[in-house]
Image (cartoon, rainbow, N blue to C red; front, side, top):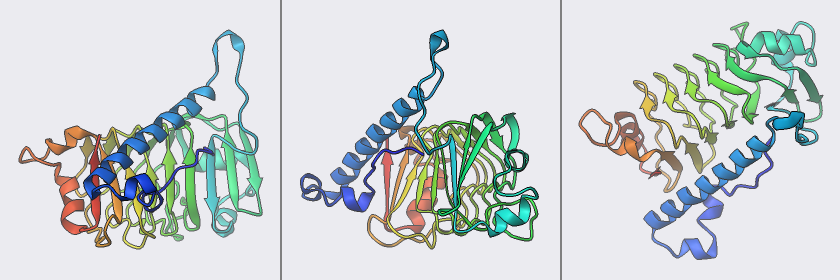
Length: 277
């Protein structure tokens, strides 16, 4: 788990040197701040990679490459036939392609799973599907997922209907599949610094019940599939949603203006602030 202290928008906007600025300048400064955080996280990630000469830097204690937290283990116990601590079961449920995870540790008190050693992982479709009747999904009680670079792609409906999921931090992912976060209504913090593509209906019907403010960070994403942010989101609280996209998205819409899917966010959410970087 990345241990970099980051201020959310509400905290940042109340800093003495920030709150006296006009709103548009506050948003611009927050975008710069998020970029700095992203660079710090990238530096941290690079430190964890094997170095030349056979030397390997130490990894942080009590954390894995992939950290998954649940509200309880009821669904996990139901679907993992050999128990919560069985590494083979986790790889079977999560990994479509790539190098499987090689270590596991469990914090029973906080319902947290730490998986280490995986790389180039493509998450299976429906891996964390939150509908209990679907026997492939572990997400009924999923609260958060944080990965420092093992996951490169999220499959279709991977987190579909995970209605308790609030925090997503996938530092190495570049692709988000169709309907991957559909109906994830509690999403509050989505940090995807290297994602370039979000599939159709990727976040449809998401965010509606989240605690504000919401952070959506997609600074490299240049493709948004149809209805990626449709639903609508309906956030009317000022500064309720702070979204970051690359500057090219201001001109790649069907009419040559702001991307059509970002326009959905703007149209339905009076409280949205869109930052372009």
